[in-house]
Image (cartoon, rainbow, N blue to C red; front, side, top):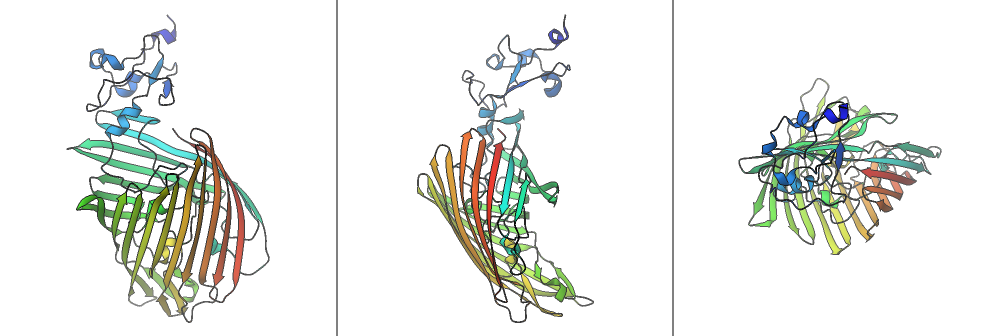
Length: 456
């Protein structure tokens, strides 16, 4: 007998207990992902454990002559692990939504009794051409546009935005528990990237703990740009938190409160003899109204910003801010979104300063005001576009360094094609402006071409 004939015949794994085994006949379509075992002697029984034949439902047995393990049950297992409500408020009705978490149906799903693991992510390659000087070569960060000096151009090709995620769910006492981990490769240096943590959190019922989108943001209002940076006033921060979500009167209205990781950004640190301190977590509340046509949110953050001069006690000041957002389907294939953000000492929620130095021994909390509008359009089954425009203005503080940021502008427009399932390519034009406290001004133009492959 040949070595291949000695191997045990692969069988389809049994479904979880609460998933009906009365499955429809297998169809020859993309919902079936066959996996063939090699001739190394490793079969499904060695992976899932030895299981007697009489424990398998006869409906789920493989066809007599098949040498494949059929993962078509992934389409059935996913819905059985659905969470209550849309936890992040991201509407996936339009294609090319890079904010969305991978769906928990189909594709690569490993499952057992009352537990399932979905592997997701995508490969994304970006070809960038800068026609003007900018300090950030991999993302279009308009705060790095120089306002003086000779002009220069830049070309860059990278795949740092590629992502990998692991979404594990199981049931306990009637609740579905979720543990989600996702990362990309924006850690390290541009020419030596390392894996960077984006999300790592667990959710049980209405309780969430770990690192994920801050309660101060609205993922449904994040612009779907090929550029990772996004609008200059868009709050796109992910950080450590503990959060409780509570429905109010009806399923459409909910309230959330959270304690989150504080971060302080001090502009012109060289002028200050000391160090920024964060002695208390940020306290954030949010109210959300969601319907079939979209959603509206309002969030409030209360912060304590500290600075400790050398050899002196910590000096604390209050920071606060509001963020009002919305994402509305004005037409079936057209989503409009907006964001209005303002407050004192909240600049680090969008990569700008919370505190500016006014001298070697003094500093002030700086106010900011930002707004963003955009449209996400589905033209047909294979074409989408996104147009977004945003501005951020910082308070004019007497005594601050003249090179400090005064305002910045971000414009992006793209066209993305999906020629095949889970494959996309697109082109995007980006324009940005930076203005310093002194009035000096610089602008930059960029063209970005991207290619992507979503994991099934």
